[in-house]
Image (cartoon, rainbow, N blue to C red; front, side, top):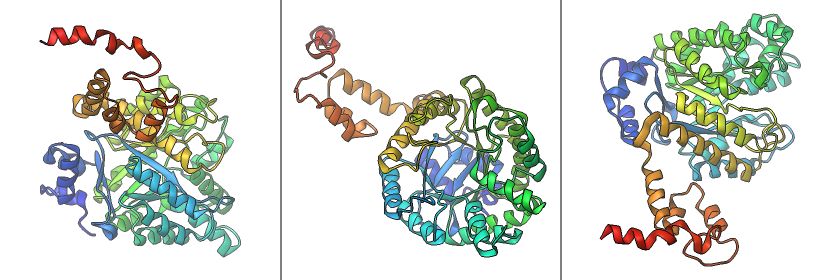
Length: 431
């Protein structure tokens, strides 16, 4: 088996990848090496794309990262729009991008979007392609080997991390379908695998072939993201038995991956009320011995239709503060439609705000420099400097000037701006 960056770190040497991430994050390289060696940090990469992508660290002691999902659908197959979404994700500060395409020509789509997403690490969900192409090819359910063939195809193309729904066993799928859950399975990949298991009577091909999958990922030194097929899709189902049983399975799979030196993170919910978010994070971190946690939202209410990026940002801020490591953004189109480019931008910025708000709690003054600078410029009414620090300078400038009035203050307070009123007194005290 190839010597992965995790195994290299475990040997005691500090890999160049660790040094680069440590410089970016402003952390001690040796501490980062130890966390990587123990599986508490991952560095998203694939040796096929070495030198072409930015090395992004995810995990303990690092800033909370944000992922953007893009991809064509069965009814909206516009590759140019998806390329524009990738461009927006790069421009507005995403850390990783995932292709969730379920349309036509998936190999070609993946390669186009991977190129459009550079220099960001790129993720996929091979289950989608294996099921879709397998059904077309066989006129029925694909065979077990086809799931593995598609997975290896993604690795050969240079995919840096992949969602692998290995934790949902046939027994758990059957229990979910017979359960009293409001929504038994909301994960698309989980539903496809459940249907495959029900039709074939066979065990989950990823679960059955986990050791072989680890060999493949070690060869390319890519990252496994263990999918949460049984994540709650309704807040009433949060932290139920099915979610926890799959998490226990995933924790066992994490340990087997660590033994082989394969980097792995675990995906999480989903829909979770505010009072259960902390419990969810702590349970996951305890069961997995600190594996990086990649959370979808979580959404804190089910009634945010059209504003689910806000519901998700609330949950993401709490999750990040408690120790979640990678936030998967949601857009205003969640549960409604394939998002358009503007909705991708809105969702990304909401998630970045949430991630940073969590980091202020998690990492303290180490990440507060932009906030302090913004506050100083605000007190001095230095608008251009404030715009430059904002996550969306064009929007901030547009709102500031929306009434066409030129003032030293904003038009909310006008002449009664607190800083204008107190400025002369503050100047006296500074003398």
